[in-house]
Length: 110
Length: 115
Image 1 (cartoon, rainbow over the protein chains, first blue to last red):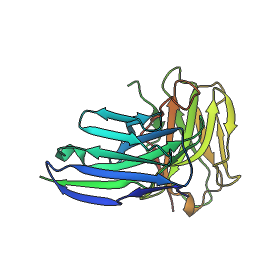
Image 2 (cartoon, chains in turn green, orange):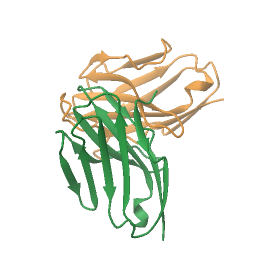
Image 3 (cartoon, one colour):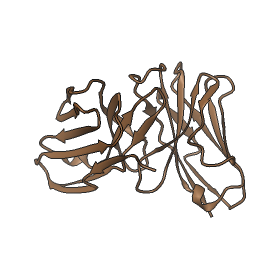
Image 4 (cartoon, chains in turn orange, yellow):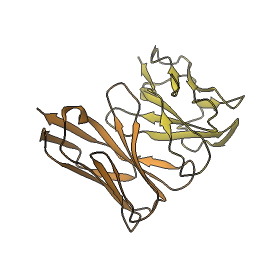
């Protein structure tokens, strides 16, 4: 089963608003990743974080690797309709040990 | 395209039938992963290949699940005597190297429905 606690499960926001979602774990990870999945497609990598405390941006997206190595957050600024989808956090300890959260379903109302 | 390709996109089978799902990773990618994604959940790890070697199969739910990558490129996930709980999206991912700093690139999955 899922080992990461991702919240919130769903969000309904107005276009232009900022969004924040986070992920926590009882285990430490060496790498945190954030993926977005659209219906009928595979997850697409948004941001990868490799060091505790690291803060990384990709356009309107910003993510941080928590200093305890047990949590991460993703912020989306000035949301637009194409931000709609399911966002997954993933933690990775070794080369092949990636665990996913259950996802945050984002709906953006124009 | 140059991404991970999976086929078929959709598969419907009767309970008890065997199925085979195919994954064509990105050319030259050393690592290949299979995941199972139940409805409303995140992907769950099934198995990992480094070239042709299956280094981790700890996520395979039962001995009815079998995966191979005989020449270190294309991989096949086979499910024998399918059961209804096998219904899910099966995702394949590949990465260029073997380190944990090598992001995985996913295909669009095969949606398997067992009747």
